[in-house]
Length: 184
Image (cartoon, rainbow, N blue to C red; front, side, top):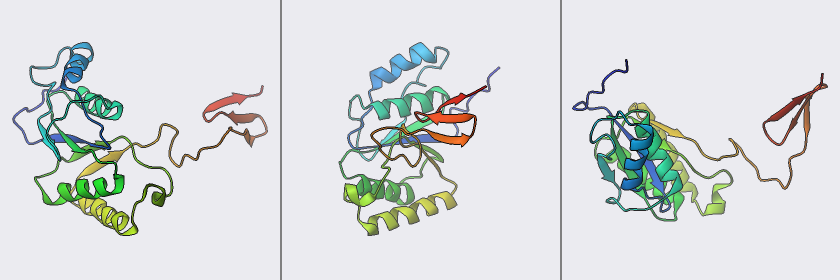
């Protein structure tokens, strides 16, 4: 059977949310009752809020992050790190600084969105980008993992009005991103 989690142990995980992506405690409890019915009492509660105190909301990314990181590891203490301003680079700077200099950071963290494009388009200053890049390296050196999944359209997405077919081989045509048709 499944291995038990040491609920008194030091293992922790975290999600980082930005731009007013708030979670909802009642929704998290509903998620657990429907999809993680064998979880122990309390497994459906966030252990700590960092950045700002709990602020109820229905941020799609926040709910996705916290429900699924907790749902696949019930019993592992989960922290919710929130910077709600609409200054993505400034908030990333604040987040990475808090991870480095504040309370001990969880070793496993999830961020499920970001910016795919020229950072100057969202008013990121070069010095903030450099500071954040250095912070990522320092966190990695400490053994902290931050898994970032940004963009429902894949890495390096560029917005085009239409998808033009490309040929990989004479008998394979790629259309509409991931649909592959092979001629006999």
